[in-house]
Image (cartoon, rainbow, N blue to C red):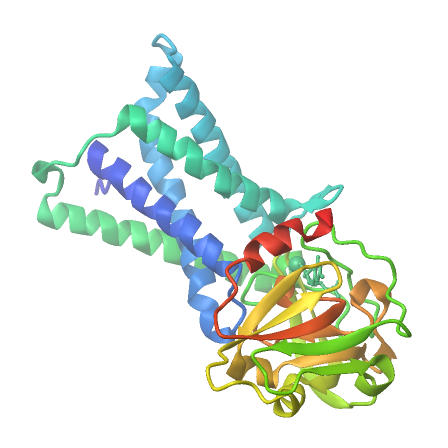
Length: 350
Ligand SMILES: Nc1nc2c(c(=O)[nH]1)N[C@H]1C(S)=C(S)[C@@H](COP(=O)(O)O)O[C@H]1N2
Ligand SMILES: [Mo]
């Protein structure tokens, strides 16, 4: 049976699946709770479906590239095809257990970059090639069958790939549902040190450091290291970095809810922002922040400088980049702090 979609419908379906893949790729960066598994699932199955769609598409258009005169539109199309194939190949390779060591980057970083590059190239490509679909493109039964076959292929291939990884015990077999691989769990400070960009503060002198709770509170607090380090609240939680590794650790420090109880947040307090000595910051809704930990120790050892000594945020279910290191200020807020995204990208510039 021929399940290939008609040309225009193929193109529109590619557009839809690309939007789905880029969208789920972006959402996956802030997904870390077990209930978020479907984001990664859609991303993987979507990518595999795209392989079939692109085979159909390339079979149809390759003569324009090999036989016809090249225009600027051809250049953009070829660049788009190359980047898209690169994004798919790097994603599939990463999922199958491969990696690369590119100075500061790994294969997953490369995959994210290529995936993001698809967006401007696709927009440009659409400016030259945009065609509205026509009614005759969508012929009920046959189209429905094609879509079923496509979705079946995407989901089936995704499932087989995961199964093969596990059965053959390939490198990718130790992945979490986020795709991250295990590195240094329950090893105290002996797990990877990672920065989002290039934060690199001098070691913080605990004698000069203090933790402040400020903002929408009745009783602002400032506490020195000796006071903060006395608390022994514990949480076993998984730090899961978006560059593709995770470590499960026993963290110890002060439960943020204790600090908030003393600081007495105002009635309209909604968010709590955790700010690093570098300016890097992230917030959590108040209820979630209450359960989070400002850790001073990991696996019974004082945090090393690289891991955020004197204190770092432990936010279970959040991704690694949200676990602010070298925290010095806890700011209770009534709004969600739109500036934090800029702050994590620019904090290293001082
Ligand atoms: N201040 C600050 N906190 C930060 C970062 C950073 O660059 N600056 N990187 C984040 C990222 S991307 C991750 S994955 C974790 C890594 O924590 P680790 O170095 O203890 O493994 O810290 C997060 N906290
Ligand atoms: Mo990270």
